[in-house]
Every structure is written in C-alpha cells, then in structure tokens.
Amino acid sequence: MNAAKPFWERPIDTLNREEWEALCDGCGQCCLHKVEDADTGEIYHTNVACKLLNLKTAQCSDYPRRHKFVPDCLKLTPKTAGNLAWLPPSCAYRLRADGEPLPEWHYLVCGDREAVHAAGISVAGKVISETVAGPLENHIVWPYGDDEDAEEYLEPEGPAPWESK
Image 1 (cartoon, one colour):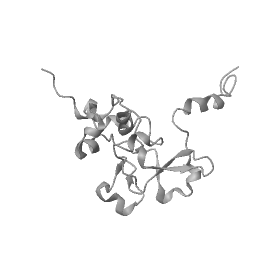
Image 2 (tube, one colour):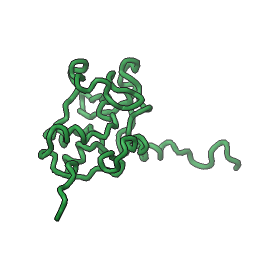
Image 3 (cartoon, rainbow, N blue to C red):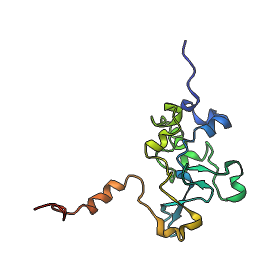
Image 4 (tube, rainbow, N blue to C red):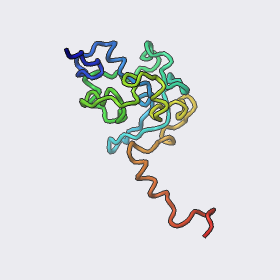
C-alpha cells in the first residue's frame, strides 16, 4: 500500500491555507526591498529589509497584521508564486509552482528549522532595516548567479601583493 505524498510534494493548487503557509522556509529573502529600473523594468535586489523583518531570525515580527503596517506587502498565492521573477530560485513557493522538489535543507524535508540558516540561504544577520538604510539605490546587490561572474573581474592577474615573487 502506497502512503500518501507529503503535502509539500503535492501540486500547490491542492494545498489548504495551513499547508501553503508551511511551505515558507523562513529565509526572509522575499522581505527584502527591490528597485525597479523605470526605463527597462529590470528588478535589482537590495540588502534592505522591510521594517517588520527581525534581522536576527529573518522572521516577520508581526506576520498576521503585516498589511496594517506595510500595506504593499505582497501576499503570495498559488496563482502568483510562479509568476514573480524576483522570488529567489531557492523559494519553496517558486520551486513548487514550477513542479520542482524542495531542497534538502528545507525544514519540511530535513526536520530542522535552522537548516535554512546553516545552508546560507537565510538573510538573518546579512541585511539592514529600511528604517536606517537611506536610499535603496545605495544597497543594490549582485543578482542570483552573477556572483561567480563578478569574481572574474575582481581576480587580479599574477600573485597577490603579499605573496613572494
């Protein structure tokens, strides 16, 4: 007899509200501000968090009432999750909307809520609050997957200055 699939492996349009909410890995990446180029529509990511994000835990400090304090906080739904290009590639909502499995570090897979932090996916301890950031344009960070490309421009040719020749 086959056991029923865990809810996180089912199509997202079959999930109830509790199951949908449980998909969130708690990384906090969706709570970071983005800057949109008015001319091209390109989205740039920043290291600036919503004022409600706890910077140490990457959790919303008032999730049930967040829209009262942050009216433009976007509510992810099964219909929108697959259409938001700014969601990180690791986002469980995006992965499941695309029919992809959750990563091994996701707490629903491994049973450890801290695994998202250990895997380096979480923004905990890596971002600043919008209350102190100043202009978002000063906080734009490399897009996903471009870090490696950027390193080739930062690598000096030849030995480092402190190395003997």
